[in-house]
Image 1: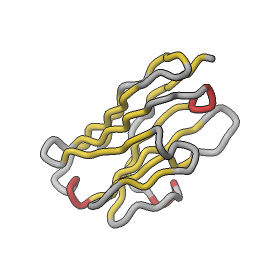
Image 2 (image 1 turned 60 degrees about the horizontal axis):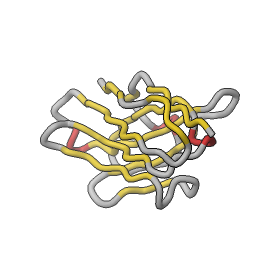
Image 3 (image 1 turned 180 degrees about the vertical axis):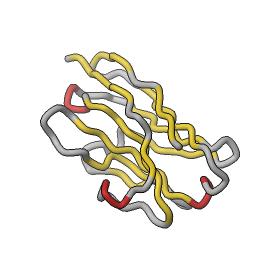
Length: 119
């Protein structure tokens, strides 16, 4: 089970940090990712992390950083230099194995947290 939080309203250029709490003993073996979905658009991959460094969508590279704390069963998404086009509901997701960008390959999903960036 995943529980995401940390969303909110921020001005363009601002920062937010999303957190995702995971339950279960197998968290350390899971690839964890963040997806987002804006109104009228498909859910899209934002960032993911398994055992090495993060993997990022081109649209967020250099602005967002994903990290994890296996001791706490937590995943974070630090979002800097936010833009209005980053406005969406953000979801954390987990799966066995490596990070992939296809949402349908993920087995576990959090409830989503709203991020709104004003211009």
